[in-house]
Length: 173
Image 1 (cartoon, rainbow, N blue to C red):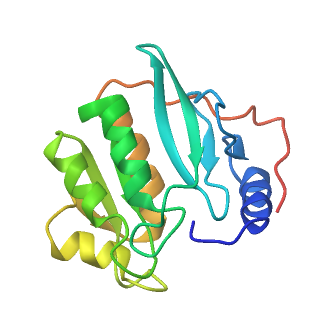
Image 2 (cartoon, rainbow, N blue to C red):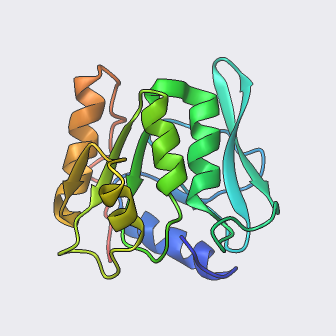
Image 3 (cartoon, rainbow, N blue to C red):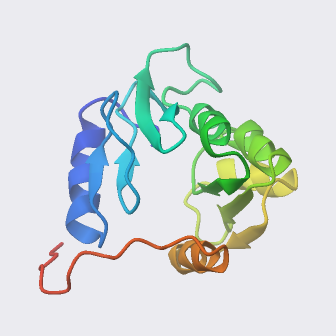
């Protein structure tokens, strides 16, 4: 999310209240766990650092902006490819500019997969539009079909989709 500091914490809290998966604002060194969602802190890059073959952690840093952005999606995607190689699934949603294009090209070159949001459901079709125009996506989908497609691809590749929170746990908007 290209958002200023403080807003990303509130975004993470809001998404956590709506999602069947735990959502947090990422902290440097935080272990990456299956079935969890990490939001980049405003004004800082979020990357992935491999600590061991079985363990990866969030890497938060203040490297220079890329594509006039910090956090930048390209930083995250590059580090994801370095940590997981062909097992990366990148998803690009509505947003301005070309951020994410180079990262998606890197994901594709590594043998990973990319999904992008369609123009009709995007508020701004800049980021997903560039990915689509440059042929760096496997599929262009309306926003409402992206989450089911992510889960379908995870299952198809025999990667266990984490169990959602118990249905008895109330999630309110």
